Each structure stands twice: as C-alpha cells, then as structure tokens.
Image 1 (cartoon, rainbow, N blue to C red):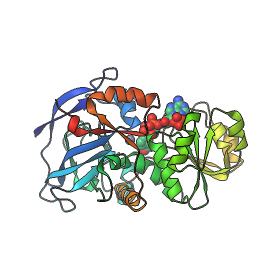
Image 2: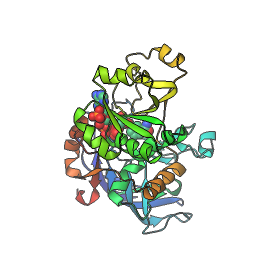
Image 3: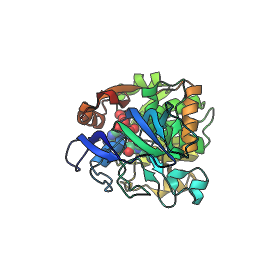
Amino acid sequence: MYTAIGYAAQSATTPLAPVKFERRSPRADDIAIEILYCGVCHSDIHQARNEWGIAVYPLMPGHEIVGKVTAVGANVTQHKVGDLVGVGCMVDSCRHCEACQANLEQYCLEGPTMTYATPDRVDGSNTMGGYSDSIVVSEHFVVRIPEKLNLASAAPILCAGITTYSPLKHYGVKAGDKVGILGMGGLGHMGIKFAKAMGAEVTLFTRSASKAEEARRQGADHVIVSTDDAQMQAAAGHFDFLLDTIPVQHDLNPYLDTLRFDGVHILVGLIEPVEPPVHAAKLVLGRRVLAGSLIGGIAETQEVLDFCAEHNITCDIEMLDIRQINEAYARMIAGDVKYRFVIDMATLKV
Ligand code: NDP
Ligand code: ZN
C-alpha cells in the first residue's frame, strides 16, 4: 500500500475536496500509473451527487485517465515503465463469461468493476477514480495511447470517445447514412466527428441555437433546434440513426418521428425510466429500433484511440485546474464547456 492523493466527494451534497488515501501496491498483473490528465464526464456528476442511487462514499470520480507507467507487476507483458497509457471506465471484469470472452467486458454477466465506486474483485475495497495522482490497474484494462495523439485531448476518448464510437460501429453506420446526434456536450461533439469520419451526413439536434455555427465547425452538415416544433416536424422520416446523449429525461417521441422505417435510436445518456412514455406505434409502424449502449470493450477502446490517430480526431478540451472542479461541474450542468474539461494533474497538491 502507498498513500495517494486526489479529490473526492464525502456525500451527495458536499463539494469535492482534497483527500489522502491508500492505493494497493501492484499485484502480479497490475500496472501502476502516474496520472497526467483526467477528463471530466457528466457521469462523474451523476455519481458524485448519487443521481443514479448507486454511489459509495468517499467517491473519487474520473474515468478518462491518461498517464505514464511507473511500475509493473511480475506477470505484466503488454506495457512497460515509461509507456503512455490510458484507463477508461472499467478496471476489471470476471473475464470468463460469454460477454468477457467476446471482448465486451462492459456487459460482463457478473458485472464489470468500474473505475470508481465499485468493490475491487480481490480485496473488496471501493475503487477510486482518476481525479488523483496515480492509479493501479490490471494490465488487461490498460490501453496504449498512440504517439500521434495529444495526451490531454486523448483523455476523453477513453469514455466520451468510445461511448459514441461503439454504437455507430455496432450498427454499421456508413457513407451516406443520415445520422442525428442529440446534444452537443462531451459525448455529442465526439459523436459528430466519428459519424462524419464514417462518411455519414450528420445533423446535430440541440436546445441551443447558439451552438449551430460551432456544430458545423465540428463537422455537422445540418443543425435542428430541438425546441422548435416546426424544425422537428420538417425532419419527419429522415434519419437512419440517432445517437442520444441527453443526460436527463426527455420526450423521445418527437425524435422517433424523425427516423425512417428501420431507423435506430440509441440511448447512451439516460439510465432512468423513459418519461413521458414512448408511443409504441412509433416503433411498431416503422419497424424502428430503440436501444441502449454502454461504453465499449477494451479491444474496441484501443481501436477507437487508433481510429482517432488515423483520422486526426481530437477532443475539444478546456484544461482545468483541479481546485476548480466544483465550478466546472456547475458550468457543465449549465452547458458551458467546449466540450470537455480535462484536469491537468500538475495542479493537484494536497
Ligand atoms: P455533457 O454535459 O457534456 O453534455 C450533455 C449535452 O446534452 C449538453 O451539452 C446539452 O447539449 C444536452 N443537454 C443537457 N441538458 C439537457 C436538457 N435538460 N435537455 C436537453 N438536452 C440537454 O454530458 P456528457 O456528454 O459528458 O454525457 C452525456 C450523458 O451520457 C450523461 O448522462 C452521461 O452520464 C452519459 N454517459 C453514458 C455513457 C454510456 O456508456 N452509456 C458513458 C459516458 C457518459 P445541447 O446544449 O446541444 O442541447
Ligand atoms: Zn464517462
């Protein structure tokens, strides 16, 4: 064990504050990482405030981690001291179930061990995330950061990137498809870039008319202001695929109307009951699909990093001093970030 430092919430209503805590010494298959950058995901806010009802305190968020290997366990083969590596939303899984065998660790039948607020599979301790100077992770859950990528703007690929890439890939989005991205925050702006790189004609649905110009700069071909009924109705029957990153309950019915027959609406932002209810006719009459998607497996996380390097895709980030983390949360809730905060861990001192 050694003493690490980081920022954690002690309850759903207290702001994040500096803490010292114990991290394990590397086990045989572990890698110890000095964290250089960590992205700030909206899930961090949901969890710190216990909005999903599963938080465990103290809760140290952070699952968009980039850093440098400082030590490796005796059996580690994939990474060595000094390598630049990343850790995303998971740090372990059962590794033998059908999902794990299919490289879909995020759907582990026994439940993946998430990077924070989950019991470690070996010692039962509460996992602590990347708002920290260091982390210790089994090598299977550590990915390589391609040399070409800027380290700070690569961090959000570990969650915002993989979460948007994976469903676009799974549903075979291809050149000429009409894709709608719902919400332009951390996930949404990456969704636009990936759909564009896959050759789709991309439309952003946003509440914020002021984001129109920015969206085009990100690669969107069109923008629909979702609060404008006339614009929504004009898009009826148009889209092949919708990627919905909206983090709060919202009416899906007007969006389903914009899908063609056989169109697909994928939820990534919502894990609460859908409210108001979906009118089943909107699915039945057009053989439309409404489904969800969770991050991506480790192999696919490596794939998306390599895809970003190959296609020169980067996240638009705002560097954050960790001492401003609570203000950053407030700004994210207000939609005031372009488009991902990334903590510069050099600012972390306890
Ligand atoms: P952000 O806060 O960065 O962006 C969310 C965007 O949604 C906003 O920029 C805004 O876009 C839109 N939005 C926000 N509030 C509302 C509202 N009240 N009504 C309609 N639209 C709204 O969040 P992230 O991109 O980091 O995360 C998005 C969601 O995805 C979160 O719920 C997060 O927990 C979840 N998530 C899911 C993952 C998965 O594996 N399924 C993985 C990672 C995150 P605009 O202004 O353009 O309308
Ligand atoms: Zn996330």
